[in-house]
Length: 130
Ligand SMILES: [Zn+2]
Image 1 (spheres, rainbow, N blue to C red):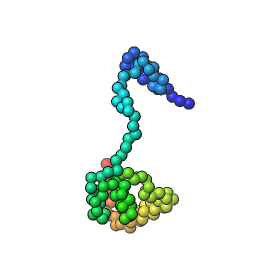
Image 2 (image 1 turned 90 degrees about the horizontal axis):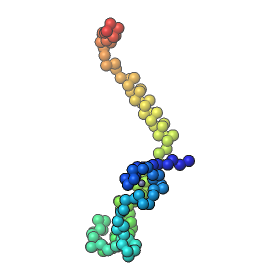
Image 3 (image 1 turned 90 degrees about the vertical axis):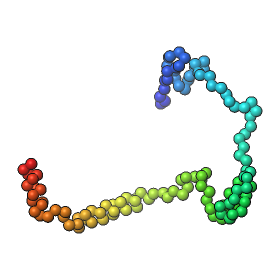
Image 4 (image 1 turned 180 degrees about the horizontal axis):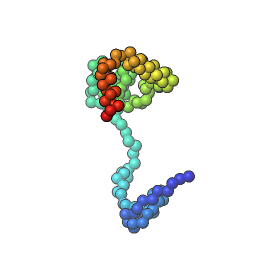
């Protein structure tokens, strides 16, 4: 089942299906693409960048990257953000939470009362009367 979404047209004021919009009711947008189609290229050239690992100068991004990898460094920026994430063991996590709550509860129950017996009686009297 698919839902049809309608939007109001700027040109005729009528509503059209957004996935079946009439071509002659579109806003003209200039096509800025070049007549000469060419793939995007990323240059490997660097203007003498000094390596942070060994202090040598490099003119190639690939060579610099390879040297970092060879020395055991990880370049930050283009890596997969989830690659180093630990997967959570839900059963173990729940057990740890339960244990933590039990420890906190027992700590609280071992604490001395914050009010003296006289203060408790006074508070009870005040609650019963007011
Ligand atoms: Zn229209």
